Amino acid sequence: MMTTVTRFQDQQTESSTHIIPEDDKPPSLGCIGWFIIIISLIFIIGLFPVTIFMCVKIVQEYERAVIFRLGRIMDKKPKGPGICFVLPCTDTFRKVDLRTVSFDIPPQEILTKDSVTVSVDGVVYFRVCDPICSVANVSNADHSTRLLAQTTLRNVLGIKNLSELLSDREGISNSMQAALDEATGEWGIKVERVEIKDVKLPQQLQRAMAAEAEAAREARAKVIAAEGEMNASRALKEASLVIAESPSALQLRYLQTLNSIAAEKNSTIIFPLPIDIIQHFTSKRD
Image 1 (cartoon, rainbow, N blue to C red):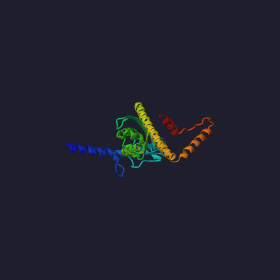
Image 2 (tube, helix red, strand yellow):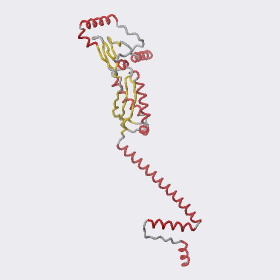
Image 3 (cartoon, rainbow, N blue to C red):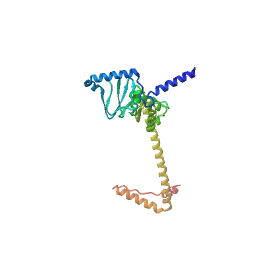
Image 4 (cartoon, rainbow, N blue to C red):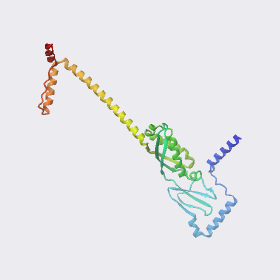
């Protein structure tokens, strides 16, 4: 019983996805169909000056026409651009725009993989590549593509961390484009581009991230300052060793200091007092 139900569902799926016949032969209209068409032709000939405006349809360069005759598609290729002839009362005329259409994805509340709630919106660019499929396989291709884009955005971002969401926008856009293009292929829709416009974080999370970034920068600043002090101490130690090897170097350093003070027009004079002299007097007191 289950096998029979499964086969029946598979047959329904195949019949729903393959609406258009695969052969190139036009479908048979039957005797009643040809009878209705003959009556329409007689009606057109009888009221020729008036019916000419009902039969002639103009299709623009960026449009294609899909014509249904008695509920069936006349040809596997769309009509246009140019002038198309239809029979009143028997033909249904549908125009399809082939230009690229863009729409904004409304902001979606998404829970990321690391349990952070964000609001994300985007923009999608698509066009109709197969007019017959866009008319016969889906009731409203434009509206269906918009709804599918919202669902795909939530599904793709639901498996991403917050860091990946903020840093890998190009990868997310490519993943969304591939998923949308695969799903809308049976509808005759070609998704050309998907872009993530804005990612809005909660105010509390923004303050927490700002405090974290500020603390990290202060920590790095302290580390850099400590490394600078260490390098300066090593340089002073090496300089003291060089001066200790040559006593005249200390006198030259003293003269350089006096020269720098005099350049600033300062009357202060620094006189260095050797530590050895102080130690000599202190030893005599003892």
